[in-house]
Length: 182
Image 1 (cartoon, helix red, strand yellow):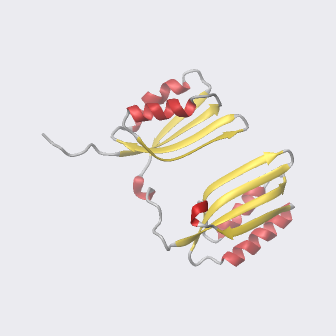
Image 2 (tube, one colour):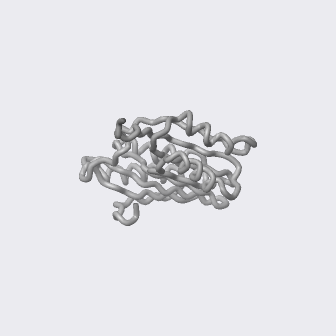
Image 3 (spheres, helix red, strand yellow):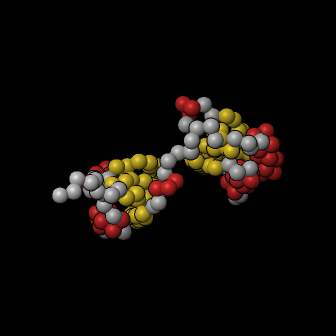
C-alpha cells in the first residue's frame, strides 16, 4: 500500500453571468467538497454582472471540477469554465527583481484610455498585476498595480504616461507602492 500523496492539479475556474446572492458560497462550497484549495481569486460586479476567477489546487482533474460546477450553469444565467493550468508560473517572482507601483487615471470617459496607458507600461516591460476601472456618469477611473523590472526607467515611464493621458484629456499618477497597499 502506497502512502504517497495524490498528485495535485492546478485549475483556473471562471464564473460569469447575472448576479444573484450565493454564487460565491455555492461555487466555493462545491470546490471544498472536492478537496480543492483556493490559492488566488478575484471577484467583482461589472454593471450588474458577476465575474469571478479562481485558481485552485487539489487532487482532482479538470473534468471532475467541471462536473461538480455544472449545476451552477444549469439555468443559463451563469457560464462556468474550468481550465487546467501549468503551475510553473504559480510562484511569485523573487524579491528584488523589480519594483511595485500604483497607477491611477481619471477624467472624462472615452474610448482608448486603457489601451493607451497600459501600452506605455508594456513598452518598458512592466507587468500589470491588477487593474480595475469604474465609470460614474462621465467620470472614468482606472487603478492598476504594476510590477516594473528593476532596470526600468520609472521617470521615463511616468513622462510617457503623462503624455498619453494629456492626449486623452485625462490625468494620471504613477507612484511607488507601499507593501501594505498591495
